[in-house]
Image 1 (spheres, rainbow, N blue to C red):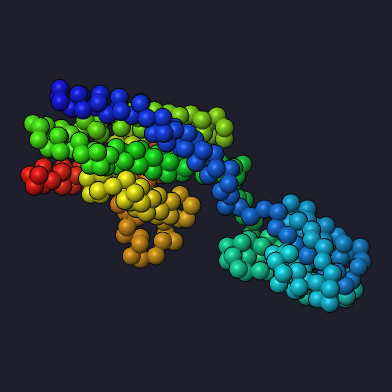
Image 2 (cartoon, rainbow, N blue to C red):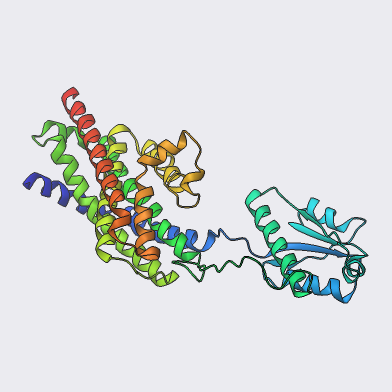
Length: 368
């Protein structure tokens, strides 16, 4: 135990002396939190829309006003021989609505009329949102004008559970915690481990009586303390800036964060013992750590949408389980019944990381 504590104190002393490492530990996670928290938006807003009205009556104007009253579309003006299609082709608008000249006449005569809608489907999800929005507006307009029965046979009373205000920050920010606390603690640990090789001090460790287990535990203990400070800074500032309050059991968040940052540090140790220079370590964290935590953790894209065989890889991504824990604590608040499996997986993955690192480092000590 004394050797482990000595190794831990040495690592903390080296960490505190390096100002660049301090900035990497606390400034960059905060910047990442702010950028991700404000930049990522999953709901389409301010969609540019061009309306070509050939009817020019009070009824067509009412329909156009209803389209823009949703606050989802922004009016765009464009002229030309075919302004609707031309605006979409040039990227001026994402959708165009063409109202025929017989629009109000057909409606007043009780005949059906066709409104043409052109949608830029380059972004499939955005196109789906535009299509559903225009359909909903059209149905509401028809009901308002008495063209649909006022009483429907089936009435759906929908209540938004957990997030009735549809605040995207409640979904995004807890996910950012998982991405940030996975990348930076592992990056710091991997760089610290590789630095021993580049400076040659690892040979002194090999020649000493300290074992691979003691060396790894000493470094893991030191950078776990740093990672806990990072977690306090990131989660604390995130709660203040984005007004994301704790609604679940705080013990779940504390234990989940502790186990997760230890996993992150152990992952950095694994990369550190497997790579020989800092460039390779940084690339390893960027490729394996950042991409998987961003794309295969459920942070942005639902896990059900991940195709096979990448869906198998997502099962061993620790950020997936921690994000589930944070979203439960900050959004759902359902408690242990929904997150107990996440804790088991985080513990198992951490044990695998440590065992593989210990074996690799033991072989390196014997070969030296």
